Amino acid sequence: MNRKIELPIVASLISLALFSCRSTRITRATFPSDTTAPAARPDSVDTEKAFAEAREIREKVMGNRVSYETFTADVKMDFEDDRGKKGNNLGVNIRMQYDSAIWVRIGGPLNVEGARILITRDSIKVTNRLEGTVMLRSTAEGKELMKLEMGLTELQDLLVGNPVFLGDSVGQVVRTQSIVSFMSKMKDLVSQFNVFADDYAIQQVKLTDADGSRPTPRVVELTYGDFRTVEGRKLAFQRKIYVEEKQVMKVALDFRKMEFNKPVSFPFPIPSSYTRQ
Image (cartoon, rainbow, N blue to C red; front, top):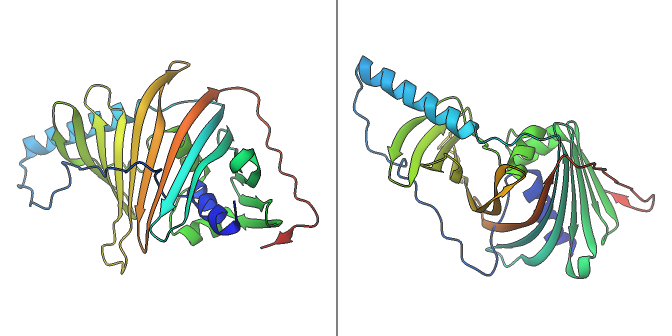
């Protein structure tokens, strides 16, 4: 794994500047709530019903949150972008302490370590063991680099499969027999959700910038699949992410194993010979 490939992978695990996919094709989701048709002006009764429905949807979606003290996972990752960069069958090991740390090890062919990442509440550290370099950043610098307000707990939610980017507002609700589709607006983002109609588990999320005047609009799509029960928790073992901004990037994460509340450690040696970036 060379540095040109490794750093986009690092970015994908630090924020939503992710890629997606393997050799298989990713089918992008459709969102019934995505409509430009003007909404009819509601009366007070309709408004009260809409508020009640929005509250119910948000509570049911958030009711699927996974609680834990520690989390570990073994993942197979494949990625590619529209400029020809790709990686297949990369081994990723994840360890997390809730609200404290995220530790990631990325291995290439024959499980040779290529990168190690440690994210805490105030810092981001990345070692490139093939190039002999180390990158040290504050979390504030990471947020500024990615232009995305996402803290440690939000990153942990993303990795464990909890709902992310769900604001207090819920609207444009469309129900079908199998899914409930709705929109949620936050300060800088507009999120569209497809959730399963029976248990409100998230199926797809689409994120766009609230500011439509950006010269290059950013679109991020998250797709969850292959749900299994682990220690009483319903989890998506397959995650696919599609990102489109100045280029198209894709990543597929196939979780092979997940465990909760086991003892974890976060070894992060930095050899004195490494060059700081």
